[in-house]
Length: 287
View 1 (cartoon, helix red, strand yellow):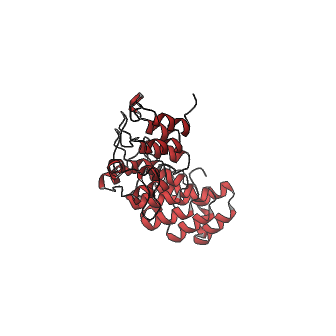
View 2: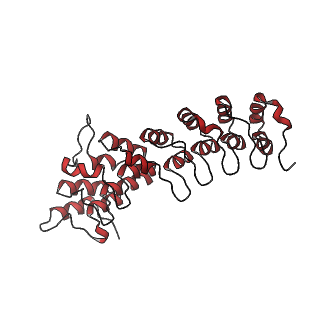
View 3: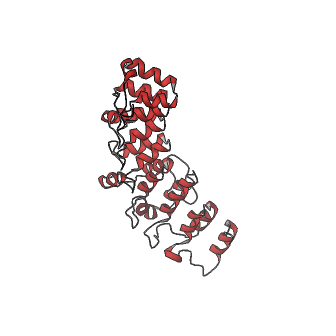
């Protein structure tokens, strides 16, 4: 079916006898659907006429929960500030919510104990995170504990932010209390992820925060240096070697140089040999 535009919403809102805050399927209100459908016009018109933003659905999710997930998928933050209110020192939006409406939404949790801030972190929605913090979202020990919860693969939000290359999100997560010394089911640390995907700035940030990650090996016995070398990420390899990475052997007896030779990364091979030329004669278990 077609979604109602702002004109139809305005007409409905101004009609006598229309209750704007009725809850429908699963307790969703018009505010939930406006967020879900990314209809800024509908939200503006309806909030001006009495639509409440502080009513949760049956899952315990407020419209702001829906907005954060939806905004992150669309790479947009058009919903975070309108729902939470305009920031200080900026002109107020016409549909800024009252303090009564705003207070319960900033730090509320749904039935899965996910706060709006935690959802933003998991969705790597850095602009939403910044908006929430600017409006006074609570960063408590409980949130930090949730922030470091692992999924079925043993990965935390930090692992995924690094894999996708979201440097700004990575920095925010670390400031919020994300642990950098955390391993997934493959024993891969966030630094393993950063090295595998050639994230130079992220590698540098992680090493600064947690130097002990440098020589941790995964289930296959590979260190971050193995992964960076195998991927041909010369700049990352140079950083890891400079910061103290050791030329270890994996479970098959391969050094980083073995992996480089197999992939033909000449520039990376030169970096490794400049540090330890004697490794050129190292043998793995297959030889």
